[in-house]
Length: 472
Image 1 (cartoon, rainbow, N blue to C red):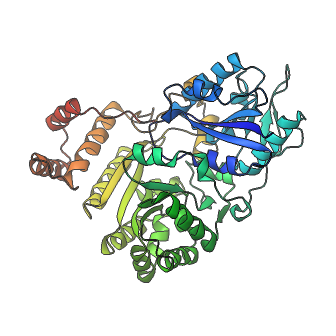
Image 2: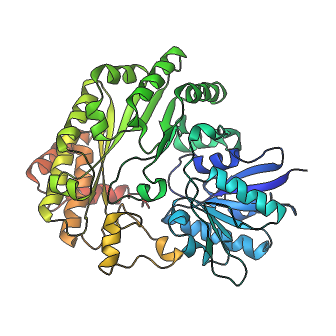
Image 3: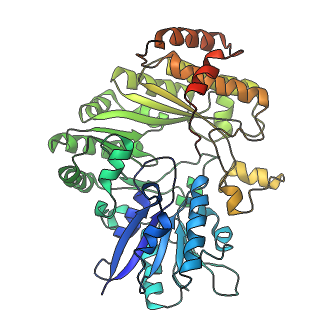
C-alpha cells in the first residue's frame, strides 16, 4: 500500500501553475507514496478537498507559502486541518518559511519547515515522518518537538537541477490552469538560483548566489513531450534569470527550431545580459518563438542603481530595450520606488525613465512597485540596525503588499503622483482600439509629457467603472 502525501497550494490572485509543489512531489518515491495536489484557487472548499484525501495512513500535508495574502489562506487551512486531524503532520515550505522558519513554527498548526531548495529535503522529511523517526540530521529543515523550542538544522547545499527528477505535471490539473488564464500558457522552470547581489532582494540569502540550468537537450525533450500531451501555445519560463548563460540560450533556441516546437515563449532577462546579447542570437531567439522578456530596471537614477547594487547602467537598459524593438520582442519593465531615504528627484527620474522606455514600443509594459523591506539583504539589515521592526506574526505578514501599499518612505503626495503616472502610462502608448481609446491616449500622452497629473478626472471615471483588482 502506498501512503498518501497531500500537497496544498494556498489561494492567491495569480494563476501560475504550482511549480514548487510539482517539483517536490516529483522527487518523492512514487512506489512508496501516492501524491495528491490540491490547489486552493481551484476549490470552493479547500479543507474539504484535502480531507477527502486524508486516509488514516496519510504521511503529511505540505504547502508552499509566499509572503502576503497566501499566508492567510495557508494559516486558515492549516489550523482547520490540525483541529480535525491533529495527528497528521503539517509541513510548510517556500519563500516565507525559508526566511522565517521560527516564526512559522511558533504556530501550533505547523510542525515542520523546509528551508530553501526543497526537493531533496522534503523527500527526506517524508521518509522520516513515514517511519516515525527523528528529523535530527536532515539538512535544510526546521522542526518543533513537543514542549521544546524550534530546532533549525544546518542548511542543505544547493543541488544541480540536472540531478533532480523531471517534473510530473500529471500531479496538476493543467487544463484548469489554461481555462483560468484564458490562454494555453504552460509554466516551466528551466533553472534555479541567481548569481547577482541586488541589495533589496532575498535571492542571495536563499540561493547563496548559486545558479544551475537544465541541460538544453533535457529541457527541450521534456517540453516537446509536454506539448504532445497538453498542446500549449506559449511557454512562460518562471526562472529567476533565464538569460544567465548565452550559450545555453542559443542551444535552447536551436533545439526549439530543430524539434519543430512552434510556440511562443517568454522569459526573464537582466538589462546587462540583454545589452551583451549579440544581434544574431537575439534574431535566433525571435525565430524560435521569443515573444516577450521581463526586465528588472528598478530605478531611473544612476545613484540609486549604485546604492541598491543592481550592477547595471541605464545605457544597458536602453540598449536592451532598443534590441527588443528591433527584433519585435515585447518587454515588461519593472521598477521599484520608495527606497529608504530615496530623494524625490530619484523617484522622478524613475518615472521619466519608465515613460521613455514605454514610448519605445506599444508592446512594452511598465510595472511600478513600492519598496517594502524583506529580510535577507543589505538594505533590510541596515534598517533593522536602525530600529526597523519586521511584522512579528504571520497575520501581520499576510497584509504584506508591495504593489498598492506605499510604505513609510513615500509621502502622500508622491504616492498620488506615482499612482496617477501608473494609470496614464498604461493608456499613453499601448494598443487600445476602444471607441474612447484615441482621445484617452492623447490626453494621457499630454499628461505624461508635461508631468501634469492634477485633477485626474479620466482616472476617477474609469476606475469607478472598472475597479482595479487588489494585488499582494
